[in-house]
Amino acid sequence: AQTVTQSQPEMSVQEAETVTLSCTYDTSESDYYLFWYKQPPSRQMILVIRQEAYKQQNATENRFSVNFQKAAKSFSLKISDSQLGDAAMYFCAYRSQGAQKLVFGQGTRLTINP
Amino acid sequence: EAGVAQSPRYKIIEKRQSVAFWCNPISGHATLYWYQQILGQGPKLLIQFQNNGVVDDSQLPKDRFSAERLKGVDSTLKIQPAKLEDSAVYLCASSLWTASGANVLTFGAGSRLTVL
Image (cartoon, rainbow over all chains, first blue to last red; front, side, top):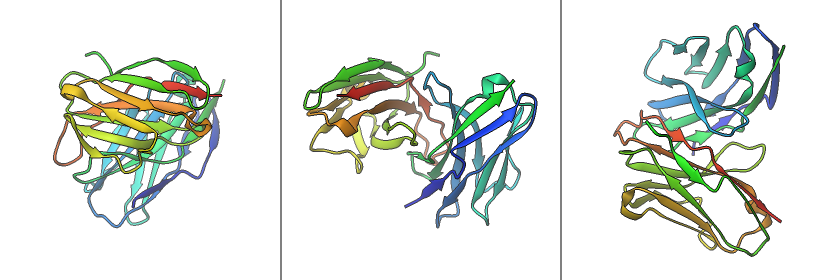
């Protein structure tokens, strides 16, 4: 079974600075999808960014970008120009090709210091 | 478009009582999921529906948890009898179905259960 590991329970960053959240996963599959979800205190999960494993180019969405290292099974999230609204729990998630369910990591709580 | 609706948002019960949670997915989303999120942990899939059929319920404690999705739209998750360890946020999510699995899940705000 696939597993997702987020080794940083908590991270903090100064407003306007850059922070990187780590994620590693274990799989024997070659085709899959990786996601970062944000969960603010209101508890509604919001998709931040998605990466297809067959794509070598790293995904970007405005201030959010990923560093996808397929051989190392690593999928980190970089948040540039951090804003107070970025404070939340961030979850890394994995989905197999053709499967429908997401497998989540344990989460990283991100604090933004003004 | 309207999001995934869940109710109630909060519920406090005593152990051995029963509770039910309701979810209304985004219109047209064939796939519906119930996840359990214990405090400090990532969500864990309890059950997945494709229309009104069950696709995956391998992690559903079937001796006390049940779920149904009548007519392939709304869904209800029930716990009877509740245990202390059932205290968690129950998240409902829905998605369009694609063969590749590239579709994105949209989550509801969750139902927080406290069992005393």
